[in-house]
Length: 127
Image 1: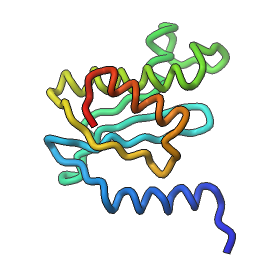
Image 2: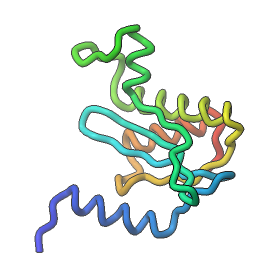
Image 3: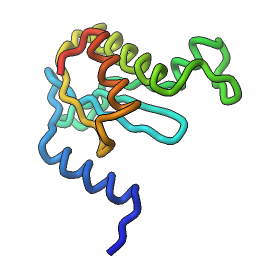
Image 4: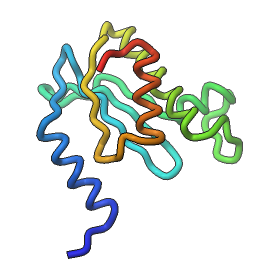
């Protein structure tokens, strides 16, 4: 049985999700990355609610002032992922959230996922 890369990632994510649960006090920081973008959310699994979210689209929007940029780059993907992590931490601290559990979404803790996590740690979140 040959599984695609996406199916393998989804299987890994299911295993992670069986162990990682977010609460009101300690929400789950969930990461999703596509080929072009990276997203992060703080989720309360007890209520099934997204507390807050951030993505590189917000960072690019803030830097250029336009709605969305596709042609101009505002930095390499790892740098942008770090900025997204810092943005998540900033928003979380505004809501008085200091501690989170990290859900890498079935992706390897490497590259952009690691950069987002380190950005969140730099921003003041504790894992």
